[in-house]
Image 1: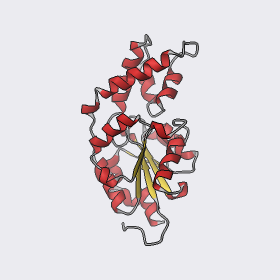
Image 2 (image 1 turned 90 degrees about the vertical axis):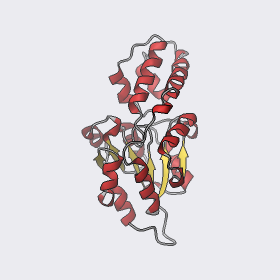
Image 3 (image 1 turned 45 degrees about the vertical axis):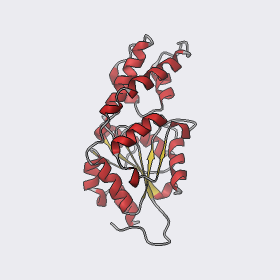
Image 4 (image 1 turned 60 degrees about the vertical axis):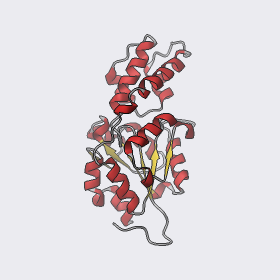
Length: 231
């Protein structure tokens, strides 16, 4: 795959980070589980995992009882922040993640991390990837009014790299990623390394599904990213 021709309209790939590039989906699940318990709520991990990928406030609102005193939500959010921070040293990139970012960037595509992680968590995630030289822009929760499945974070990422939705592809591991991208007409490549099945991702609307960054990298030429480059 070659770099884009001079004068052609730039194209790009937007990447979710947690569970897509970094093996952190289950660390988030455990951190939320502990945070809920600290506030007296026993929420099963299976229910929590299915909501990972939403923004934190939306996740808490979705999982806690409607009739609760909502002042507890901030306590849960703060607890999750502190607990997840203790896992930063354990963060590891998924196999092939850095190489995938490098290949996309070297092929002439803009590369943006479209993450709704908090800024401090995003710094830790980026440090684990060690690929900043191949990332054009990155978003955090501060860049979006509404979290996934609303598309705000993707809009912010597109603006950050100066490309339009029709010239992009999104890569994510959760159905919330697929729903958010669909609202902008962006095709999503799903990856199952965050714990969501191929069937669920396809049902949500993913155009194709891979086991993780390494398999996507190995099949890049025939993927939606390869079609973006060839188009």
